[in-house]
Length: 154
Length: 270
Image (cartoon, rainbow over all chains, first blue to last red; front, side, top):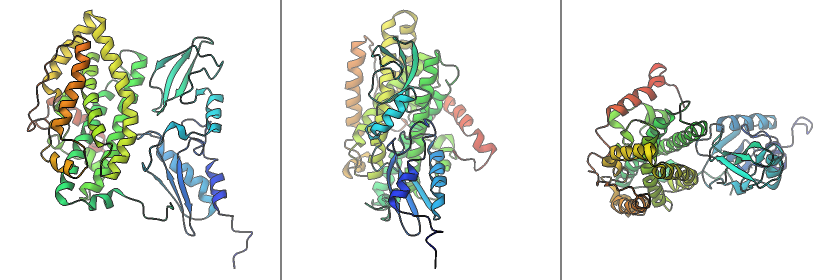
């Protein structure tokens, strides 16, 4: 007989909470849950399966994200299977309200927000549609003279 | 829906096709994957030396997108071809003559005007090809295309702005753009040149129009922009038999570059 003390609770709520701890490796201010890339997960007797949606097709962080999910769920004591799919396209409207707040707080304009995350001014120029990672653009605030990055609207 | 249900994999979808359609689909996927792969590698040659810092970032990011699209398409091909080759073998272990990218992408990177002209001609044609696959009956491709189109939109905005900038600048920028268009024009029509079996793809609902129709659509779109920018261009119709064969020396050099790691370290992965 297995004592309840030695078996961690493995239910949907526990797995969801654990996934909410996994940060996006390129923008650690936001979790993969708030980023909206956790399409679904399934807690079975013998395995935990997680399906994730890539933000960009060629995102080089996918392997790092899969490894972080596996590591975070390892404590549940059963195999973890992570796979990426395109069953629905990930879009920026999958980012949660909390995720948008966390982005803005760390200096990234949330997708579709044309104001400066530092001073709130709308006097902002798009410096480059592209940025240091596939999902980001670079902008410049003419009011507080601060360059910043914006999450691309996709 | 629970994940315990078997996932709808590419191989199940491919197995449901009759052999003729499956072969035509493989042909189509190789052309798109190789186009994205070769254009991504060619433009990655700008990393570190683009004319402006902003453009260094932009062209590197675009190249990264294109190589990502190629990788996802080669992964799809693994299931469609199903001959035991993995995505890396498909991407890297073919001889130059086995690549099916179009001759437009056989041109070397060239100067910035060459790159803008080549990208503009390719991205507009590729956009029309992707539109025609948006409702594809082959679900794994439809799903991937939905994602790719959202990224290509940015590439098209970027290259259209540059085309306009060079064309409107007058002087040397416009002169260089005209020279680049002259060099590329004979091969511009190769992107949407008919594939040998594209009609069976239309019949199976994998693509919504024949390549002849897509090519005609592309000429209208590009013609309108060229007219507005005062660029008079003759874009000859490509010969389908040579549109994706007889690759250039420039491509043979690039092939040597992108297979170098793989040849030195057999089995090296993405």
